[in-house]
Amino acid sequence: MAGDRAGVIATWISDSGAGKIRDARIDQRRLGRVARATTDHVDHSIGVQIWRVDYDYIKTMGMKLVEGRNFSENRASDSSGIIINQTMAKKLGLKDPIGKSVQNNRPWNVVGVVEDFHFEFLRDQIGPLCFVLGNNSNIVSVKINTASMSSAIQSIDGIWKKFSPNQPIRYTFLDESFARMYDDVQRMGRIFISAAGLAIVVACLGLFALSAFMVEQRSKEISIRLVMGASVKNIFRLLTQNFVQLVLVSFVIAAPLAWYMMTKWLEDYKYKIAITWDVFMVSGAIRG
Image 1 (spheres, rainbow, N blue to C red):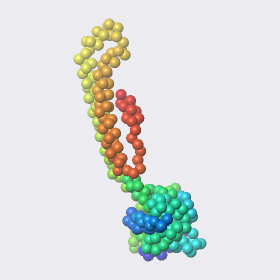
Image 2 (cartoon, rainbow, N blue to C red):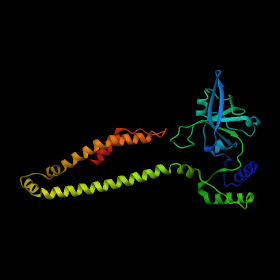
Image 3 (cartoon, rainbow, N blue to C red):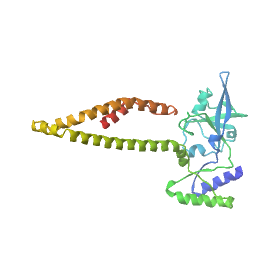
């Protein structure tokens, strides 16, 4: 599909009321460029992703402009304009980026700065990203009302058939695409939950069998103590104190190991929570 045809389809979808056009955009995970900027007589060169977008992309995607403005159809100069994210401005050393020139095979004039957002796996730190005006011949991104999902898809499919009647439309949902990035994490989580649940069941069965055996072995002792005036509370403490000691020993051994393993696993992520000891104290109290 030619680039101008992608724009026509985007406009038809927007005008049909089926949804609001986002953009005809590139796959961000496959594009890399080098951008340069000179500040204080120092040349900065960085690797950066460049997304070719339309005028409505920033607004429709809900991105927040922290400096400058969005692209405007009323400004012919925006064909040479560029919007960068905060990370790119920082890496290029642009303290006041609006109006500055960024080189990438040609000069681009910075017209806006968007707030940093995650566009790749959370293991990775947010990288430099910029937007320029342009069309992509492969993808049209559409924002639709989820309350009328099926009718919106049918309307879009009807518009698609007017342009490519012999080629079925292929579409994906953005949230599902991001969810697939974490399939391995969710799968590992399910495995650990299943293994932990099985371990708890086996441990409980073992403790139950051991306690029943101990009660059977000490039945005469328990009877004598009850006759001598021992309370049920004292009998319970007598039978459980050995188990409590075993639980405490296992907790002392398991907690540092669990903390170490979780800390090592989280090292793969740039954005993560801190594993504090109160988590283990609460779990140990519940377990006890």
